[in-house]
Length: 114
Image 1 (cartoon, helix red, strand yellow):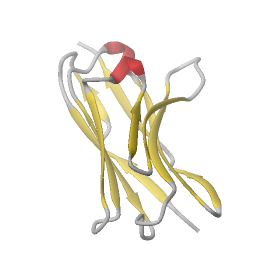
Image 2 (cartoon, one colour; image 1 turned 90 degrees about the horizontal axis):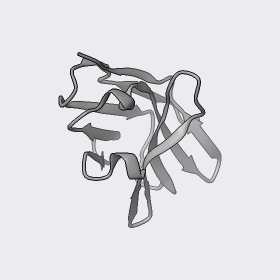
Image 3 (tube, rainbow, N blue to C red; image 1 turned 90 degrees about the vertical axis):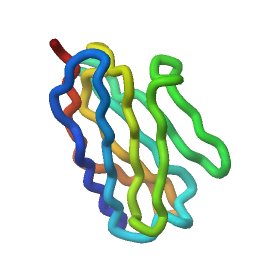
Image 4 (cartoon, rainbow, N blue to C red; image 1 turned 60 degrees about the vertical axis):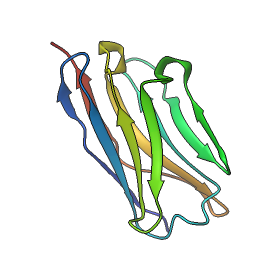
């Protein structure tokens, strides 16, 4: 089945940038949807950015700062995170939906602090 591994998280100062990567164990060409979610301490997991068909959706809090993308040849999905804010601090998870179900990675920690 589909396996996902996130990487690229770390500690960054406010205003800085990070690029998260999600490696997928099989072709991502036919996935119905791919996206990034995050969960901050004491909060529920929330959608950050999702690609579904020809449409990309972003949470209001990250619009203009984050960009989701995919590379079918490398079987990877990315989240470019710019102008990071302390409230972006969370564990970030990648997710894919396909006909067999929904699959999640283990998450990567992003901490934005001065």
